[in-house]
Length: 90
Image (cartoon, one colour):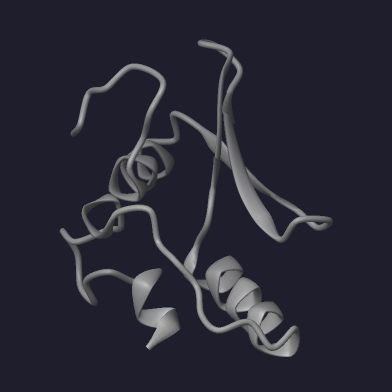
């Protein structure tokens, strides 16, 4: 874990989801996932391969030249296939 206060990598979010420490929902307006822990009052917004794919399709529809990812090491590089969000842009 990065263990940086106020910041979660995708692999950390997946761990919290698997441990049922947060639940996830999809914001249909932005095609973004969010998670919330009612006990700690922590909220996080994140993309999944599905939401990343939708955003890439929208970029193509608008004729944009590409997409950007903040940092490769914040995707899930621990499980296979590695980098599931970034793979959507290939």
